[in-house]
Picture 1: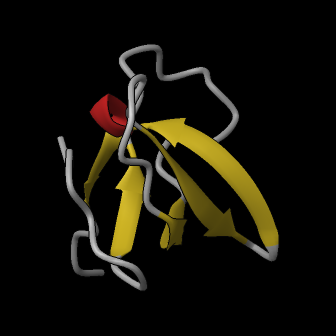
Picture 2: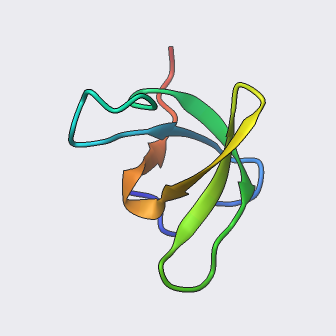
Length: 62
């Protein structure tokens, strides 16, 4: 889980429910949320999504 990602950091989306459409996708942090709930803006394939911090992990190699 990434609670405090940095702008431009590469991240991967990780949901418990593996059938979610963004599961496993990789993107870049564009907006860092500071309040509650702690959600972050992640750009994936040219589209900006708002993702809760509990669903973000550091991007794995490969």
